[in-house]
Length: 335
Image 1 (cartoon, helix red, strand yellow):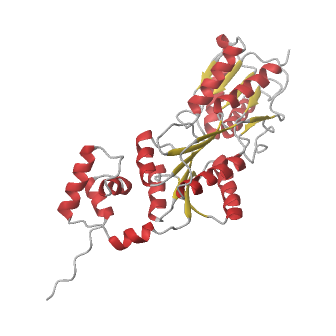
Image 2 (image 1 turned 120 degrees about the vertical axis):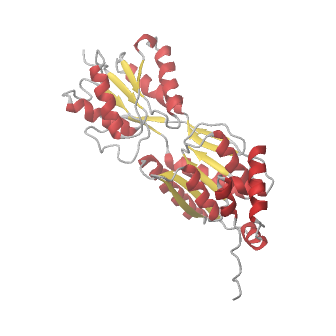
Image 3 (image 1 turned 90 degrees about the horizontal axis):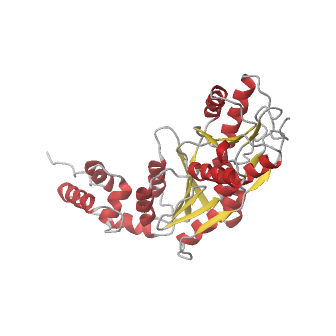
């Protein structure tokens, strides 16, 4: 009985056997930069052992322009959704096509990006990616990358972001103008931009000669983190008269936690968020916040992605100016 033709060995087979990502295996097989010598030896040894040969027809197909721009985003982050909406508006007016890949559950930024590469996207827009510099550099060797809403400096990666430090400085300046001195900051934990906003808070407190009053409370991205932070604040000593939060969802949670303890906002404690997400009024009190202008962010990111895909630009950093949106969650300090 004749044996059937053996299955062709693919790059995915090589990556699995070499215990690395498909994008890293691709870099090795293309002799591109971004992989260590140890990784190169391991991947090429596996490829030789398995009998891998690049599919020239597939390579020719990938070399054709697809016109697709890939987008990775956090599915549970309202601010990310606003940037995606802005990208769609900009893409529609410019005749470009987007492909989305969500970061959720067991799918991290790396896996989301690899899905888009398999779809032959010409460039990737990554919203607040949590990838380390090494992995970003590897991706940038394979496809143009535009990182949105994350401060970073990585070869080959465009950045479009807000002035995170400047935004928190605006929040502290606003609260000081209302007479507040005991101002705390609840940070975003390990989230992108968290350290920049925390540093902005500390610098602003020092400028106003309030460095001895400065207190940073561990927080996170979610409303539940804000509730826990409010509990920690209430258990930790004298109540502040004002709080700045890493993002709007965190601020909503802080307000919720304060109300649960019988503390009124803004009569007893003023609260400022960051993002000006669409549902700024979804909490118990309309939220004073820092606006990041997601529509402009999206427009600039798409322009960079399309231009980079066409080799019209070199990577750059574009830092937007934030502005304060004053609503009912802040007021003059009570005497």
